[in-house]
Image 1 (cartoon, rainbow, N blue to C red):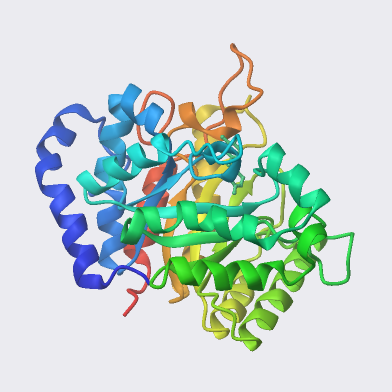
Image 2: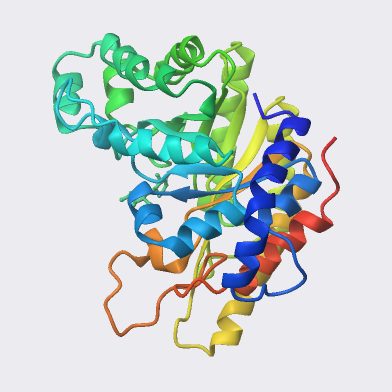
Length: 368
Ligand code: XIL
């Protein structure tokens, strides 16, 4: 369940009060206007959050300050993924996730549980075992070892991550280890199992490639909608859809109408929606900085204006807060310009994208 309005406003307020003075003294001036992202989000009864890693928070005081200033939710970037949690069978490495959860709790933040079943994060031993002898108990044991531990600190779970891949099957399901082991029913089974361990959590499917008006993403939206419909028809405990929103300036066009229709169809199924992993990949890193930043901010604003007009959208989370920590940095060689696709740049100055996110929250019709 989402955090009720009163509680959410209280969390945002409590976290903001002790920080305001320190934040103003040390932070660069905001791009436009004033106010932190979580505060702008809370005005419309929504949340703002970011992916985070506790090792980075511990190392970088600016990151820590930016998180405390802007976020009411954190998503563990890697520490809750199966391969990170249980690299060897039965040897749970819960320390980083615990530390992040403690940081969140101490500071009045909530966590998104990311993610239980993801084809890219299955420990080798589990993949081997599932290939030889599909045993659902393996999945249940894993859920049991992770989910209850965090109680209500985690109130949203990405139970299934990235289940759709076109080009294989009529139903669009990705032919991953879970499908191979348990058949297409693995999604319903996982959601039912997750409900037992998180009776009050918002149980979600999280997916990418849903944003643009291009044939492959049209297909992905279509196939995902059929999956969501089927699950709801079968009364599977599914509460929400996470839209990753890894935007990309080399892709397009983005159509307001197409995206709005998609959100409306998801909402009509009674599902909540979260923009879970927002960032923007740039097209031309050699263009003048102001033009680059404007392109990123403009796309962000267009995208969020549509998303936040849909009352089912309860919040937005970026995939990292600053370009210095972004996963888009992978493969970057020193000397090249860094991708600028997050609310803070590498030096922790706010980017025009910061202003775009805040302005979109402030302009959106409040959720009731
Ligand atoms: C990425 C992390 O950012 C990387 O650090 C990690 O190596 C791989 O995973 N979609 C998701 C996220 O759902 O979990 C991925 O995160 C990015 C794409």
